[in-house]
Image (tube, rainbow, N blue to C red):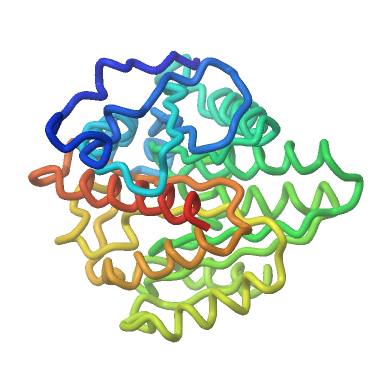
Length: 320
């Protein structure tokens, strides 16, 4: 179910004496009503059905509005064309939770935005968002060319999310994407940075090796250089990037409000350097932020970090 933007959420400080240089996001954001254009369109994926299926801590469905609340007071920098397309959520609950329907609706919505020239940034929601995001880009590119596009998935995450299971969940999206690519006859290019060796089974590492996944462990990302070098090598081999950031890649003291808090994680300074690099590459076609769970947040820490990273994506992409 797609609900229009609730613009009453966008409220905050107004520094009238500062003029345009003192504007904040809540003063420039507009409701997206289906028009074509250029700039950033925010969409919420208010779903944690995949987290439920994955036996995680539910609550991520409340993530999009919590991020918007923190984005409202962001200063206007390079991103000056900003729209809110509202939320997509499952119609059902319980055993028939509507996950697949919500993912399909998200993918159709994102394909439409891409076709109209927008840069979509989607606010989650559980990491089941990834299958909908990728399929949206796949639909868009498939409609434009008969050849197999070189899509690169860059995921900042403590988990590979390559799990084999009978039902889709927040732990399966990149395995599903690999299968989707195989069915299409497309290559599968997946880079996962920040992987915890203590949060992934041997089966997941084996599957990552079999699928030729590029990765770095969290303990290998104590500085920028190794991660940026690995990222650069990956980006050189693709033409289009789907960028996804799972907040559990960050240490638990930075992002406590997630389904699976990280015992170690990757420092925010390293994550921001990677965000900047992808957004400035000229290859980022869409992005999302996953796994914010306001029910377990402390002083809105995780929501503030999510908003900072979303704003960073928007500003860096707008400036490039």
